Image (cartoon, rainbow, N blue to C red; front, top):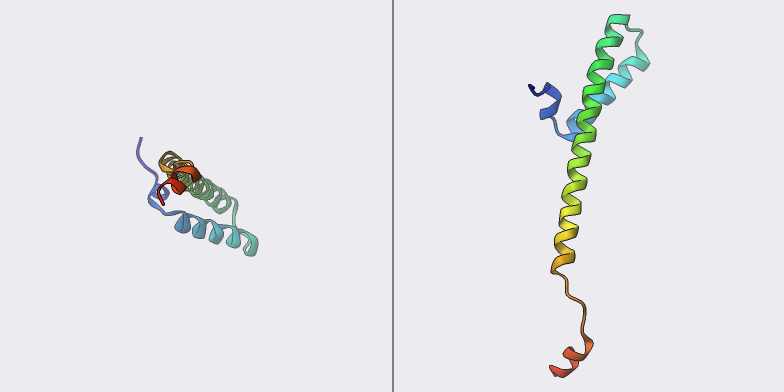
Length: 83
């Protein structure tokens, strides 16, 4: 399976192009062929946006898991004994 051209985009790039398509569809009166072409492109861009958001969520979850594993409960008694 080959990657679509939208898969290389960052979230911001894909979202920006998606906004352009929506704006064009709202402002112009495209032909049916243009509508279908824009719809197909928009769906690819939307898929890329979802993929980037999911990747970010997984990275955040990984950081949270790593932080939880490295944190130790606070032990007030051992702190007092150390003085």
